[in-house]
Image (cartoon, helix red, strand yellow):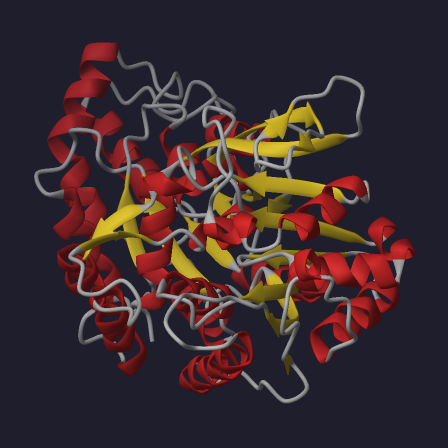
Length: 480
């Protein structure tokens, strides 16, 4: 789980220090004392100070106050336990607001001083209402620990779970999910994590991995995202180039490639990797094979299984033909064909087995299509960008850079599209994509789509956020 944690009043005793210093300064002014025991915030009407007096005192002293903050009891201990349990810790604080000379260094030094462990430090502007929400969405934060009522509500309204740290100044809002001690936070997250484990989606990756280089990135991305996925199987899809390698040889090479990447990432592939079809339905192939059998078995076992298909969709189509009832228990996300802006679908995954595409389209299975040209084709990057983010991070990362530069099929290229990561990214965060529901089209013999009006609905991706996808990919692949 990715956990975001605010600092002031969540890790530090900011309000305690502030109140102590305000009481001191009040004696130096008029010594009127506290005139309002229950203000919205102590800076707003707790004392009889004018706005000018309050702003002047705060601005002149807040940085010194922050340097003297102490951690809340047990915060360092339990944050460390959360990290040791496998959670990612994101410190997200609103100190980039003009009140500090160098907020990043100030904050980093304080965190190091009190041994607060974290994976990433993000500093936003606390006075911009939506700033924390935006960074939480960008970084796929599952849970935020926050003290501000205003920010908590904005996070909740945008689908982010929040534990609001109880303070004297956030009592008016009764709907917040409150916490008071770090032991409580740890225990609740541990229980929540067990529940979340049960919410992981069951997935099968259907891949022609030795085809070029993008599948290697996709499977690595999937294996690095197991907080989201219960990876039930990786099935080998057929592919064929005019390079004297038969489909059977390609299947064997793909199988070995999957094992190699699984070993690099310490993924136990025993009874997880299965060889698939050695020809296409278009050529009247309809034979039983390990991949098809496993797809049917898992579909029948689970309430819901997502099939992430990033090659020719033959295995999925044959499984549906052999056991039509599985369409009610699976959802297919397929990278294939082109957008409706193109006149044909002479795209590799589509054209290899047009009849398999027809079979899937006509089955009425729940289906999402990510078109290649005009959509996934935007996922273009360069060897220079890859080497900047990945080279030297691990043996796998070095291999991915090498494979990108020369995939063994298309020759040396400095720039390519890593198409297949689109399907994994779609399952990780659908907010990075724009989609629409359409009536499922028919497929003409020339591979073009024939639009319909009253067919069952499928989902088509029209846009993907390249920057957010690559940011997540590089962060995950580059992390040991």
